[in-house]
Image (cartoon, rainbow, N blue to C red):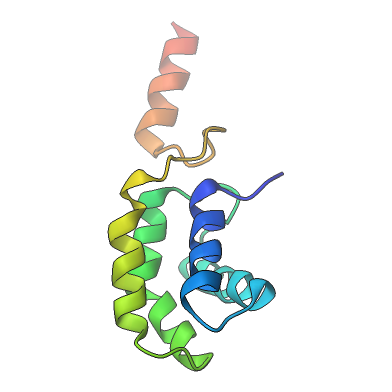
Length: 105
C-alpha cells in the first residue's frame, strides 16, 4: 500500500528545504508519526499539520536542521492544498459510524 499524499509531500519538501536526503527525510517523518501513533499510509493533512507543529521540530533539530520552527510552520501553512487519502483510511470515527449506519439501514 502506498503512503498518503500528505506524507509524500512533506518528505519531498523536507528534501528540498533542508540538507536531509530522501532516506533521512522519510525516516525522520516516520519516526515522528510513530511517536504520534499515526501511520504514513492513512495520514490526513490535518494529522500531518499537528505532527509538523508538535513532533517534527524536535526530530529535525536532532538531525541538525537549522530554523526548524520556520520550516515546519511553512509546511503546515502549505498543507492546505494537499488532498486527504482517497482510500478513506483516514476516516474519522463519526464518518465510519455514519457509513456503517447507512449500510445497515
